[in-house]
Length: 202
Image (cartoon, rainbow, N blue to C red; front, side, top):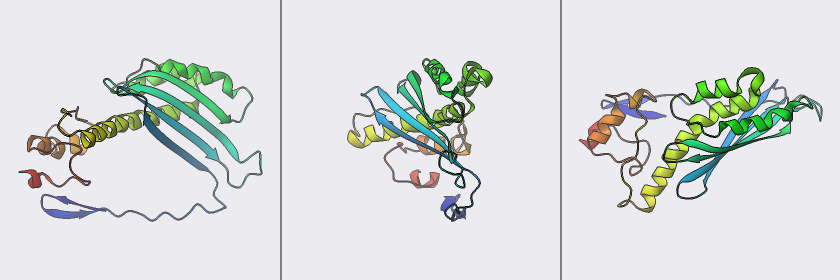
């Protein structure tokens, strides 16, 4: 993968990952899908699986858990949440799933991980559903941006400016290239990826 930095070409190698061998000790997968509910809400469904490829049937899939949250796009507040367990190691594991309805009311902006830990950390929750919930925070933010890009693509004239992810990474530092591109006239969602360097817009 390559990109321009101050006119110079910067290349970051992307490793070619071989398929996991049959002798793999453990395989964790997290996948998420987002879809619109209406003009103001999206639902994000996350699934976490832990598999021991070497295990005999009945001892190979350790965890297969889902978390479904509906989020209000205006402020990224979770309006509802439901956890499910398809595979789990102990008969008592599913008893904690209803507790994850407590995610309702949380904003996935700043403080989400702290609030998640306070409400559902340790013996008050499930380590694996908690891990899935933490991973869903950034995915929800990304869903908000994707929803915004979709709106711009459908109606470029009617889409006003959206919030910028300031402070989220080096590109979005207060004086970083993301801010400078916006100041130079770039409108998120209207230029193919990767977004060209700042000089392209000046």
